[in-house]
Amino acid sequence: MTMKITLDLGGSRTKATNGKEEIMFPSIVVDRKEGLWDTSTGAKSGIIVGDEAIPYIGSNARIYYPIQEGRLSMKIGLELAKYAIRKLNPDGELMTLNVGVPVMTNLAQRNDLRSLFIKEIPGIKGVMVWPQPLGTLIDVGLNAGIAIAIGGTTTEILSVGIGIDDNGKNMPIYLEDLSTTSPVASDVAMDYIINEVTRKTGIKPDKLTAERILIGKIHHLTFGRKIFNVKTIKDDAVVDLAKQIADIINSILVDIPPVYEYLKSYMVLSGGGSILRNSQGTIKDLLEEELGVTFRTPNDVFFSNMRGLHKI
Image (tube, rainbow, N blue to C red):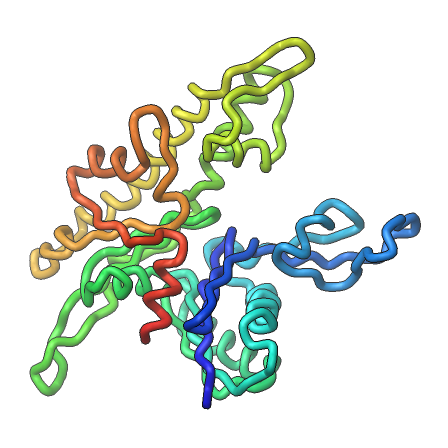
């Protein structure tokens, strides 16, 4: 029997499933050299991936992320895939892979990724590569619509319409002109927070601190005896991100030809960035108000891409 494994290779988190177990881990690959003064006998060196890589960030290590300029790095994607497969297929069963990648990954890149995985990962019988947000459409039961996935490093927008095949039957059509990968994502809001805190305090917070501010884990910063409230900066960062994403979505909506006007009634919002919120509400609320549309949302915005693609 062949096992099916589905991977959603995100810029911040990789999600994977074998149909029974679901996992999520940081999309980080570290290449670490052994330190001259390593004090831990268990310190690792070489390629370290996911959660295991976190302790080595900044320690004689080069850090790699999978998404570069909106496109997947093949080699980093391979390391993330190997890590997920070790977790989900420890016995090395024969398997097929469904792999979700950024929307703007072109045909040549998809073919290269497929060939690389088959060559480098033992036991693979076949690899199918899909645009990530297609999974969200499938997950909410749609065969056409506009899926917007707000991630950590990119926002993916996929438009799928309905056409007619040679036999007169309905078939989904990928609408390339109405789809895109944008670097405007949660990272942009974190950069906003870092810049504003630095400008107002003269002290630059690290990215982890900015992330904790953005998700509401930190409400103030302490500098010596001074306490600096970051609530307003966090609120403004979410508003700024929502407006930038709204501009991107609107640039697509205004170009929709009349034949696909119905897609505006089938818009789905997913991804970890879709649940960001400030004192005014969620980013979904802000986008709906800005755009005058209503978004559907999957049951789980983190795993929706992966769960939908696993049904293919």
